[in-house]
Length: 290
Length: 305
Image (cartoon, each protein chain N blue to C red):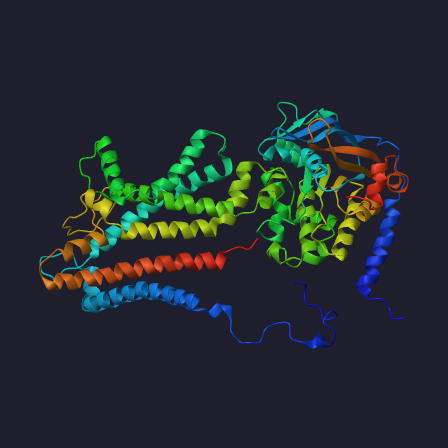
């Protein structure tokens, strides 16, 4: 039998390693909640997009939000750092607490919320600047005092497992990087402002499988220092990387006939994938709908 | 009629599916006629322009010389030149740029990035900017005249007065093209900036505007090249004067190239008509150069997101 191509073998090894990481023991309930979503409704104008969601996100854990399209998982994710404020007509009802403090309370600056709770998007979106300036942008605009910007940039890139690939071309445009490298650059850019939580909205949706595995590997490495909340359409990905998984679905209100997103089940990933409590979760996991 | 399938047709399985008669529906008489008409329209436009250019060039070539650049207007055609008009054009267009570019870019950025579309006044401004670009140039001249009278300026034919009229004239061009350039910057770039704790203002200054700069530059140059060729509002301000000195400041009297050409063509002597043709060539070359620069910038720095 011929040897598999080195790249493929790498990928398989990475995946196996991941699986071991993902099955680490986590307590039944998050011990320290960074973010508490407490009976939250999200509206777009008059339309109730997501209703009655309650979930606690544990510190230094990776939580996956899964579910079919239109179930409100991205809406909830964007509510967690007030990115929804930027959408005209979007409104969050009910407290979302960050270390116990309601981030939607009057007087809270959404700019500060976003500095502490960063976000990585579906499509890599590096700025049309050099690799170096992409990383330095955050510290500069937020007025962070860093002893040496060069060291700071190096640290962020190292944490995002990108330093070795880009250290010789820091002054070159970020657009010269591959899609996977660009996405890791965006993660490094987020890390550079030293956030507490990193939100990821389908970060691997536009990446090939190898690049996807590298991001997942990176997430496992970042877990010790950051809390990660990831929206994904890929159930295998949730199973591979997440400590806990929240399953959302869209339900039709019998009175109004409108579709609203809602949280069906939230538990340890092993529980969700091996013995889900709700039949809808089981149906989705086993591929019967969604 | 059922679909053709090789299996259903048995022995005939290898018959060609596509007709091989060689007649294409692209070549019916109507479509040929249509193409001919299109070419004809193009030809009429192009030939007219070419004849005009060649004719002007042939007329003006003998006076497209050094004296055109260095000489002052004179009653003797062989001594006359367009020096004050060339410098006047540069002064007026330069001042126009200083007035119109910051205003236009700021207005566009406000409308595109900060204005609340739900407010009626923002929608009113938006609708009226498109209308403004259709207002006849001479109206802007009257407006500038009124503005100068209002602040009590006696001498109307001054650089700043002309620049105010031309700035108002090209503001809609700059605003519209800047808005388009700003709108073309993908939402994701702004989101990326906001998501790491940048303020909307920082995002606009450091991400959106730099990314939109090539589009803004293109629109601005096109606007300024229009200002360069404009005569009507300046005539109204009294730009048709006989100047024998170089304009030297915002409050200096001035004349511009289009006005100089206009005044020379009104002379009875043929020599002045030659002079006018020469100056026209120069003006045309300048405008073409600016438009060429705009196209170059657009193509060179155009970003594909």
